[in-house]
Length: 337
Length: 299
Image (cartoon, rainbow over all chains, first blue to last red; front, top):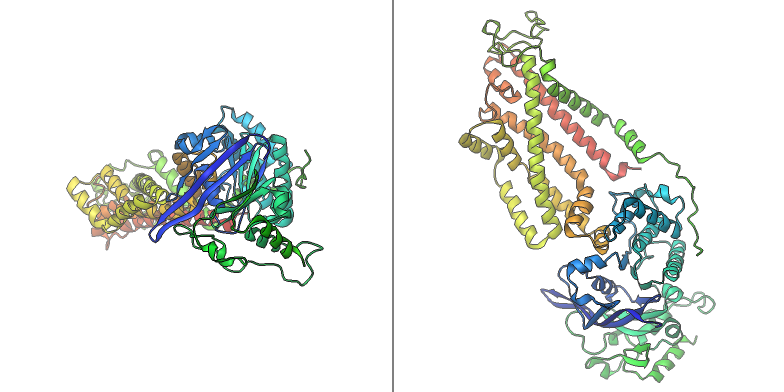
């Protein structure tokens, strides 16, 4: 991480009380994001990445509760903010981009109206000024004929165009932090690349911090500065993206990386890696390592007690009982054909 | 900054949304017929003082039960004949349209406000609010409308205000049920979450984000309830517990004419036909609106 952190999270927990017990989908999360940095949270479905995003925005479902030892955004303590102040912050200094561009725009209004409203809610500007900003941003996100697009309804736009509109909408107030929850999952691959490219370019231009939530390691490799790999509600490994891809330490990260085909290295017809087994139940406390049932290196000590993050350097940590040397050896063995 | 731009026409070459809507509306025969009839009846009601050949309350006992003009004994003096008190039937029919439309519109408006408010709260907040609202709806559904209306009108006396109030306070159940279901569906969509993520208040989300998206369903329900209210009013008037004489109400005209029905069938046929036409037209418009609003018919 370079520069001062804009968002600092420590000990973030999300609990959902259910009849059958307490669901704990996010456990003791800690990370920090700097201005101008792209931080990726990666993990499979149900590992708590989307709930983490909603917890940061305080937009969790009604029954879910969030708690954190530290939740600071640009010097403001988000954990102590009341709902009204938080609502003032949302869309203004922290913006969010949703997964489904098809449903994230209100079908009852023109996109111009929605873009303008996003700004009028937070800034004392005239509708004409908001309109100018909307046209400026639509052109920035690569939409031609912006002023005539403003009069169109969402159903008249394609998925890729809608996601561009969503991005423009998130940028209306010039946010310092953007949380993008799987922004390209619903798009086809060529559009995906365009949108990612666009996000990266806008981020450089406006020096925003971006938290990108995804299950796609290909996206991580392309845009992230730093990554946190989540498993069963915990961060199991974190570090700079190049470092994680070159030397994955946690057996889960190693497994994930084996699942991606690499042109030239993966032989035609050869089996891609897969991780057998299922994610453990997130009810109550985890005894021992959450991954041990699926881990080829698991040993009896893995079942006992909580397993802490092992720091390798100020930026790099992993959550496993295996010593770093063995982890590295495992990674090398797995990478060999 | 270089970003691949979306390669499309510089100007968007397609008919405007207004033009498309116009094309769809004019292409829908049922809707156009219904709308034409309603407009005609509305015009008749509004222009009644100028269109009516006579005062609807003026009695002429020497000219009682004169048949309409197409009958051998009819005359152009009273184009639709006269009733048992010698009042001009066409004039009463025109003024009666005012009462029917007024009752239908006001009752639908009152019940729409109650039902929509209840349904929006139940669907959006869910949980306990939903439980309470659903209980209230169930309670209302357990009450037979006609019996309750009869009891209230019998106790409070029949007048236009009472009939409107009773129907308005009784016909909101369908609004509530449909609004609740539609709200529940819409509130889970991403744009509601997105609205919260841009800092919208709850009131704004309900009124500005959700309500416009369930308006289609509500307009259709409103037409159904309007037709329903008009028919119920006619039923109450027929039973002598609705609008009181000498107001020219279509239901009342049917009731007053029933004793003469064998010798002067037009006194019951004409207001009955008027009621039938109005209710049919309202239902045609309701059906048409549903078709026009359905997403599969949009371009």
